[in-house]
Structure formats: structure tokens, C-alpha cells
Image (cartoon, rainbow, N blue to C red; front, side, top):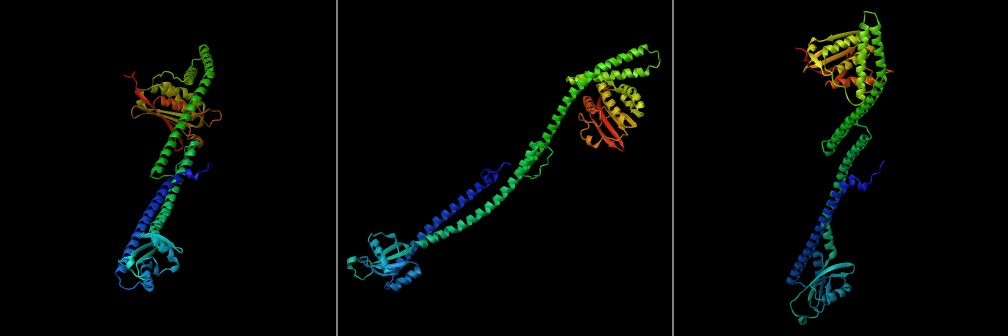
Length: 461
């Protein structure tokens, strides 16, 4: 069995685009949220600094260390005051960390970043008094530095981005699970179709497809089912064509073997009839008639083997039935069979397209019935649309179950010495007469019914 590659499977092809789109959307939303939170954090820092600066500039209380500590706790900042020469005065930070900060204040940058200890700060500073540096006393506060912990700003930014990120990841998990379930269900249905199509490809055209859905896969299943039916019909037709071809070959071979023997037998009977002094020539006439009819069958078999057909010979239905009665009566008497004929008078004004075809089909059915039954009934009536309806019924044991489905197929027979060519010839003859043939079992009788198209007999005025 061919091993499935997951990355080329339909399940992966259906799942990864939606998964990639969901991940991209989540990352995009999280990135935008982080950027907006970062901007919001910086704006918040600027606003807090402006508020602290305004408050300190307007205040009249001294900025001692205790005051700075209180203000720092309230604003979550660090505060440092410097003289005009950037010498630290009071601070909420350890004094040993302030030397680097003093040097950075000399650069006269409005804001800058600095690392003190293990903490990175964003520093804003402003002049506390509006006098010139030379006019200030050595202990007077000239500069106030406000230090914001950048880790708190980053934390707020990540906190703002984490909500859409967590929401997006949970959405991805749910979408992925649902998409995986849907794709697995679809792939299972397609796998079932694949298995059934492989069985059809192997020649099993009788398979019934299990998928009865109303979606595209269900319609595909229905289309495959119709295809299987059509393939089965084509396969049956092909087998029938092969059987007919073989039937033609066998018929031609048998006809060549029988024709010479028939010619010799007919000549011997004719010679015996000329030399016989008996006045009762009925039996000899019947024998010659049988030989003529058999010779006609052999001629047709020879033409059938060559792929051609004998020219039709229209004949009155009544004449066909009379000839059949004369030829089949001695055989029925010989087998001690009660052969009954019921021919409708309405058929006297009609003729059949080819008399030998009708005679051959009826004769074959009656002979088959005589071999297995004690009573045989032949009933012919004028049906609708100027058609002949003829039934051959017998009280024999019936058709074996194993032969019922292919009774009219070539080489189907229950006789040890039979070849199964009789009923196929019956069907072919009836189809040539634009009719059909079938059979049924009814109340202990086996009934064969054939139909044939009729036309008015032009010889009847």
C-alpha cells in the first residue's frame, strides 16, 4: 500500500493556508498592539513628566530627600536635585550612582537614557529657578532630574500586546482543531471513494458507493456510481459481442459439417419416394419438409458465420403456423407429448417480415418444451399495434435457478449434450422481426412469450 506523505496530503494542503493566515493575522495584531502600547507608554511618560515639572516649579516647599522620596513613591519615579555645577544635592537613588548622571547632564540633552546599577532609566531634567548660574548660591537647587524606569514602560507595552496575542493563539488552536477535524472527515470520505474507484478499476462494477452526501463529494460519488453502471453495461455488451462472434464461428463450422449430410439424406429420401409403391406418402412428405426446413436453417447459419443475412421471405402467419403443426406433430407423438395449438383467426390477414425466422424461433421453443414436459400449449393472438403475441407453455420442471439470469446468453444450457445455442438464435430471430422474447414461471407452467411486428397480407383482398 502506498504510504501517504503528510506534506503532500490534502489534509495538509487544506490546513496550512488557514493556519498561516491566522498566525499572520495574530502576529500583525500583536505587533500593532505592541507599537500602539509603546507609543502610549511614551506619551504617558511625557505626560507624567510634564505634570511633575509643573508641580515642582509651582511649589514653595523645600525639595529635601524626604520630600523627594514621597514624590517618587507617588509618581513611581526617581528624583535627583543638582546645583548649577551639576553637583548632586538630594536624591532618591544611592549617591554613588550619581557621578555618571552628573556627567550626562553636562551634555545639555533634554532627555536621554542611562543605566544606573542594573536598571535602565529614561531621564528628563529641567531648571528649577530662572536665575543665572553665577547668581545662585552653592547649595541652591538649580536642576531637577526625573528618572523613569524603562522596564515599567516596556512591561506595559508587552502587557498591552499580550492580550491579543493570547487571544489569537487560543483562536489559532481552536481554528486548527476544527479545520483538522473537517479536513480529516473530508479526507476520509475521499479515501473511501478512492478505495471504491480502485475496486471499479479492478472490474467490480456492482459496487454500491457509501457516500450519499449532498455536497460536492456526494455528487462526485453519485457520478462515479453512474459511471460504474455504464461500465457494467459496456462490459456486458462487450461480452455479448464476443459471444456472438464466437457463436457465428461455431454456427459456420457446424453448418459446413451438416450441409453435406443433409443433401445426401434428402436425395436418398427423394429416390426412395420415387421407387416406393406405397400410396401413403404423408410421412415421406413430412420428412422432406423437415429436411427443407433444416436446410434453410443451415443456409442461414452459413450466412451468419460470414456476417451477412439471407434475404427476408415474407410469409402469412397462418401458413407458418400450419407448417409448424405438420412438422412438429410427429415429434410430439413420438415423445408421447400432448401438443395443443390455439391460433387466433384474426391472424389470417397478416404476414410476418420473414417466415423462416418466425418458424425457427417457434420450432426451437416447442422442441425444447417437448423434451421436458408432457403437455405443451402454443397460443398465438393478434396483439395491439398489429403485432403477434405467441406463448409456448409447458408443465415441465422449469428453468434451473443457476441459468435464469443468463438464459438467452450463448452457451447457457442444462443439457449435458447441448451447446446452448438454441435460445440465443431465438432471441436473434425475434429481434430481426422487430419483437422481443421473455419467459416466466406461472402456476407450475413455464411460459415463453415472443412478439413480432406484423403487416397486412397483400394477397388477401
